[in-house]
Image (cartoon, helix red, strand yellow):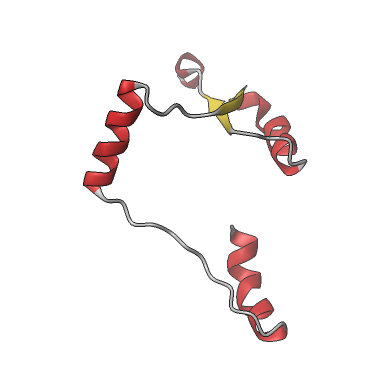
Length: 82
């Protein structure tokens, strides 16, 4: 995202295209409806792989290679943070 943020304005000028970022605003009603759908099992998140905090470089490589077909999760071992 940082690369896009800083290169976007330059690319917009040089290629006569407009680049921008779309960041949706949180809507409490939508979040509540989404939570209900998740709780009832009507929708399920697609989790491709789970990595530990120590495996973050491997997870990033996996994402950069374009293999992910769902969310890639980084888990924290709360006991190791003490």
